[in-house]
Length: 218
Image (tube, rainbow, N blue to C red):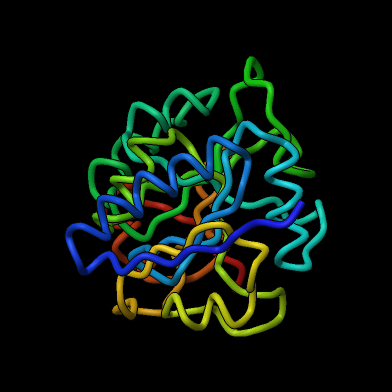
């Protein structure tokens, strides 16, 4: 099935409103969209449509062993996706969300979804970007990965995303160039001691300032 690709300039209010409507409809149909976030551009799909998540991994040239994180528009949506936030999760959310902190938690076993080989976990984040938040509030949780082919540089503009992903994507929401290409910090909350999985936009010292000890490798 060929997807007709459309691009919307979200700096223009009319196009932004139309783009958000089109993007939400595309997500509900199981199509892929590209959206700006507070880190880099993301390619997103409905988190609860397995075929859409597979299409996302295919578009990136990525396998099931690298499941995408899930972006949410509200804290409530995040808490519905996880078994428990661990003793530290709420304090971290209060301090850093919306923002560039991804939390890996045990996934809610009652949910029927397939993000890939997650080993029962889910990586959740609430991004600090108005276009992303507006879309997520409309669609609910989305599987979102950086909008680039695996191994290529992350896209900081919608144009760069389109050059790499082309017509695999139904809607491109162009929010201008992202201010920072530093990825989110990823913290694993599934073990007794929170463990840093990826250094990113939020320094470890800041995390320690909120929750005390954070395990790092080296």
